[in-house]
Length: 398
Image (cartoon, rainbow, N blue to C red):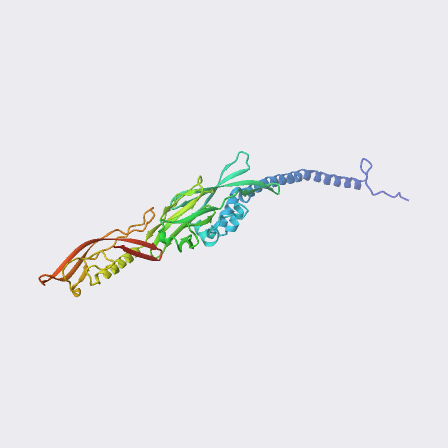
């Protein structure tokens, strides 16, 4: 019988060809794994490095845009611009401020607050100087009022970190300031009130029956423009502005009209003076009262009208029906402008006029009757009282 043939080929090392093939395949696979291992780890390492770099950039970006000291001030300004005074107070101090009795809070909320912020125009926020230890930084807010440049500087303090990377900041306390709006010079008779002014668009009493001192205090958060004016029937004050641009109390350099004032941080109080003036109606009313006074004198059929600055004396007999008084021309009283100071700011200039008397005079000895025309110059002085809604012209006569 022929021998059975082993169809399995063997290699030179005694292994089967099949085993050798498997060995070659395994070696090839091993070589393939070896070639791809290096680039894969390099890719992951590069990705990790890029992630760390990108993370560093992101942290820096977030710290600059979200967690920056400027962002704290911008949030504060946004609250003011929206009329949200409570939010601004919380950002500026965290506590409800203690205000002096009688201080109005009208300018800390709503439209009056919005109006005061809009008057500042466009705001710019920039980072100022850091303290040497880096615990706080100054943030400067710039703006222009009536073409004059102003700025307010806030201090922002570092308060730690969030998530290990992001700086946390908080504003140092910004004190609520008090602005006293005062009408001046205020006539004594007008001090009993009421007198209401427009302050940032809100009507507010400056003189009341309960207050002995004229004027009213308003709580204000800087930066802010306080604008006030007053108008009544007989007294008025042009718009006056005060720019509250410091974060400490100070004295304003206020100006009337549309010009802006500033504050001096070294002083203790802020005052916005409303320079009172007469309206045109004062002169009109005074001369109407003068005309009535003189008419009351000329209507009297006597030689010496009662309470009047003219008269006539004679020993002769005068028929009463012949007496006729008149005033030469049309005399006009001149009301003096309100002065900057003085105990009695209301005054009217002495009036120079001439009275004319026409009458029949009968001589007691001869009985002769003659017509007489007597002209008598006189000076009329008077007292003037003016309140927002009333004028009284009182002539001084014997």
